[in-house]
Length: 239
Image: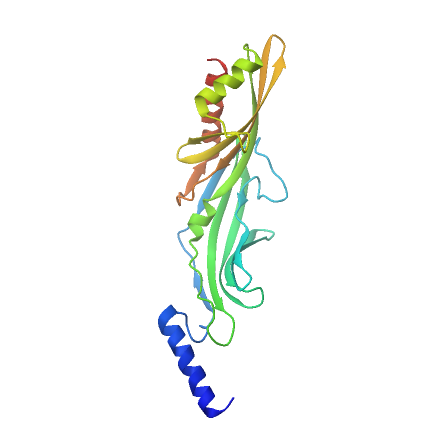
């Protein structure tokens, strides 16, 4: 590149930076200690656990955007903790915010208590010029946005057709998902309902998906939420 071309290139970069507020050069990596942030979940012992969850708590992982600009959240579990990273990137280089989170699990007689405690925040920017901006990442909001599943069943003296009609009348039916959607304590609850003949009445099998709303609570008592949902289902099947 000749001298005139180099000057034009530099001015073009300065113009882009001024217009888009994108930094010209990457910032240095930064590490910050995190204090006074903690999220505790109280879970029923019947909570459904699988390999994609942490003791039944499914936290978000995703990638959205185009090939030239993607936003991703990566989650990696360690022996006594996890690493959560939010990244803006193009699959080769990017900028990110990374949290180290300690995990603690205590199993009691009636419930399971899971505690997430963020301890450290790191930021980085890759690339030589015009790096992606460091993404904002509220770790407490992230830790309080989860999906939790639980199963329970309720018996009824009424026939299958009556039970299904009661659910549609009380909760409304989503014909696309084939489910019923309601809320409890501000959190969305999706109910997959299977009604079967049982003796002289019906057996109602419920798979409940609790989607917490990311309201930054320090404690989310899902045992109370699922108990209230079961009570509502019991009321519906005895209408």
